[in-house]
Length: 461
Ligand code: ADP
Image 1 (cartoon, rainbow, N blue to C red):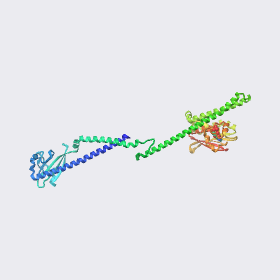
Image 2: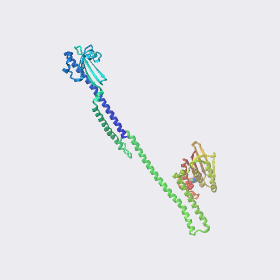
Image 3: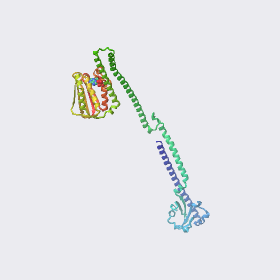
Image 4: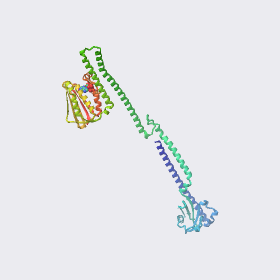
């Protein structure tokens, strides 16, 4: 920007300087021309007075008298009224042609005075001629002088002019340098970290205000990020604490059972019962560790890398889940059904993750149900929204309103002991939430305590 600005200022200075220079030269040149003409006229009038007084013959020994007073530059011609030259101070009169066609001559004959400029291309020179007819005389007196053209004048003044142009260039460079420095000063002094619009140009104020606004925005975002970071940190710490706690409980049980068996406090007939407890606690730990691993895979994004997206038929997935869960449902006295108008409804997604999502919800619908209850799975296209809906409804124990928001949090259970009793880890719905987000799908929960729960999963179709 700085060099651009300097370039512009330099160019502007040079244009102004050269134009002023040309203008001054023009004015000066026309002033000189006017002065030359008036000098020539004065001379012609003065000489015509001499001619009138002394007769034109007086000029014949003109050279000796040197009355022109103008040195070699002035030429005097005496012309008869018919145009023939009677006398010329430069060329012998008889060698000169008839002068009746000369404009200054014709004008003088008519008006008493006349002037004309002629250009000689061979000499690159102009001549100015001034003719006067003395009042009481029958001759015309003409005075001529050479006048330099602009080019000759320029050529003669070449060295001073070059010096002036050189001086102008130096002056323009200096002006450009110092003006740029002065213009740039407030801009250079602007601190982008801490902009202030008080000492800046009016034209730049909107820009600086935008800068101030953006800085504030960045600070706000940084604060938000820090806040977010802190929150994430707290969640992670809580998760670690929860995981430790969840693992500690079955481990303590296993350790306790093993200890009393080792110390011989258990009778032979009870050993299989204790071993079964140890087995169940170990199984719980395996399920828990599996869920934790799944969740961390989903969070780190490695799940998406390891599993390709493909066409998944939701009808087939739900039918498979129903089949896998039928035995379990029967044990709990719950019926499970699956219904769809279409034979198949395909979406793009990660097959085993979609299976896991729907399985977890159906599993919950059985776990938190009652004897004689039902679980109904329905799949259909939501044509208006171009979505596919998987609806899992049960008429089980329902979820209290205040807990409905929180059940998707890790390890959150409405009734901890009941969840444990039915083999829950508190991580199932967290996995559902992450899996749905990965499919850009939304989840809607509707539940009423003691009446039942309906979970709707909307997948982009
Ligand atoms: P869990 O392993 O304990 O089932 P989830 O994350 O799957 O954990 O569910 C969290 C909690 O939400 C459960 O402990 C349960 O209290 C409640 N819940 C989930 N689904 C249902 C349902 N269909 N009916 C009643 N309560 C439910």
